[in-house]
Length: 198
Image (cartoon, rainbow, N blue to C red):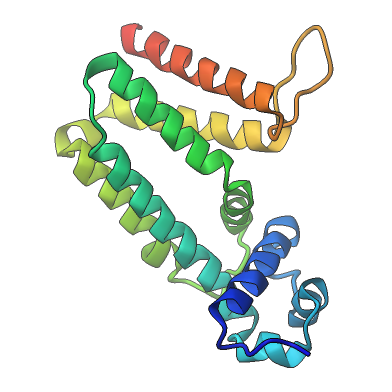
C-alpha cells in the first residue's frame, strides 16, 4: 500500500522520479501515468501530490532554494585572493555537476518545454541571477567582461554535462567519472586564469 501522500519523504521521492523524467523526456512528453509507474505508486497518489505541474514546480523550487543556499555559502566562505576564488569555483562546479538532471530540465525549458508556464523564469531563475549579482556588486555583475566569462562557463558546463570530456588518446570520459570531473575543474580554473590575463 502507498504511504500517505502527506509524508514528506513520499513527496520528495515522487518529485525525484518526476524530475528524472522531466530531464530525460521534457515536461511536455511526461504524463502523470508515467510518473506514477516509474515511482511505483497509483495514479491517484501523483494527483494528490499536485499532479505533473506541481511536481515540476516542486523540482524547480527545490533547485532554486539549493542554489540560493550555495551562493550564500560561497559568498561567506573564508579566504582571499586566488585560493578563495579556486575554492569558490570548485564549490559552484560541484553544485551543478551534482544536479545534472536539473540542468537538463532547464535545457528542455530552453527548447520551449512547459511553455504554458510563463512565470517559471521569473520565479526560479531571475531571483538566483539577482542574488549572484548582489553578491558580486553591480560594477562587476553588469560589466561586459564578467558577462562574457559567465556565459562561457555556462556553455562549458552544459557541454560537459551532455558530452563529457574527449581525450585525444582515449575514449570519451563520462561526466559522472571522477577523473573527468577532476579534469573539468582543472580546465575551468585554467580557463578563468587565461581569460583574466588576456
